[in-house]
Length: 348
Ligand code: NAP
Ligand code: ZN
Ligand code: ZN
Image 1 (tube, rainbow, N blue to C red):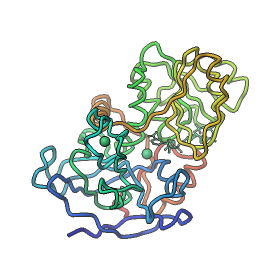
Image 2: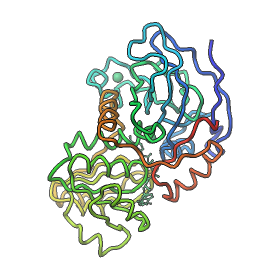
Image 3: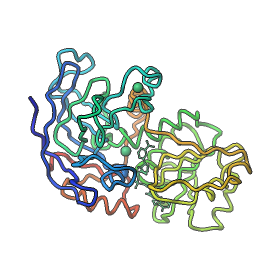
Image 4: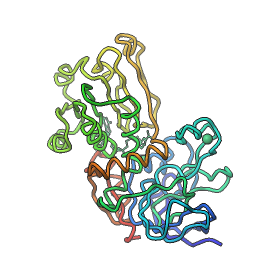
């Protein structure tokens, strides 16, 4: 038994997204089924439908910033009941037995977690389909509780953009007394500004877009550095304890490493399609580190959602109809998104 589910999919890496139906499984004993209400549009969706990272699984239904309301629960489900507001982020399962899973960092599952789309269930065969669709079914352990207090459409991006920036800021204990640079003001970047400011750090927005200066300040950034102007860059040499790099396209890491203090850390969360090119001297000249971070574990994602509900933090969004998804991608490629597109799934 399964449910025929309306969706938008890419049939090949070169085709636009278009309507497509697929079968969602009936909820098993430990599964939660929910009607999807909103789904955020992440730059990772675009990288993946265009095969920019690795050969994908097609047809591909993207979307991993998913929120909705529960319509069915399996007989053994304990955490959820009909009518609850819930969310699913970038993972729908993991092996549960490796050291990472036991530690609650399922994003680093040593046997490979099940991505929400462009991946497989833990049987390593059944393809997974994401949130540009009407209906979701997932194991309750990978379903998050969502507060009724916040604007639901603006909560959706927290499931990826939110946790991906919250997790490294917590890991490196960023807070009062730290100077943080946020590189790239898009979906991840604007959440990084909100969290770093909320944690008490001094925040500088590093952007290629002069038109985003006023917004950066409104989001809470203390300074704005237009990175295309060489003289501006010189002013911030050896300045930052941390730079959180959210840029989706190839860029010059060496230029940004020069802005770090001695022993400073450059944290990559953006994943450009081509390998990083880093001069050894950019690192050893100041005992600098370059590091990376992927999303966050399930427990930490719930902690982040609860933190947002408590501190009234959501994403700044532009709500779109599903038929406008392809033009939204084109705008995202130009850096023209303020600051996350969210699909109103009622239009699907
Ligand atoms: P986005 O909304 O498109 O934002 C990216 C921003 O990067 C742009 O708004 C722009 O900001 C800046 N940018 C773009 N091209 C640039 C260039 N050539 N040079 C310098 N800056 C440039 O994308 P997003 O959804 O935030 O995602 C950002 C990246 O993070 C993507 O690669 C995505 O796949 C990755 N990601 C990683 C994880 C993870 O787990 N680590 C999770 C989610 C997403 P300005 O206009 O301010 O310059
Ligand atoms: Zn994402
Ligand atoms: Zn595991």
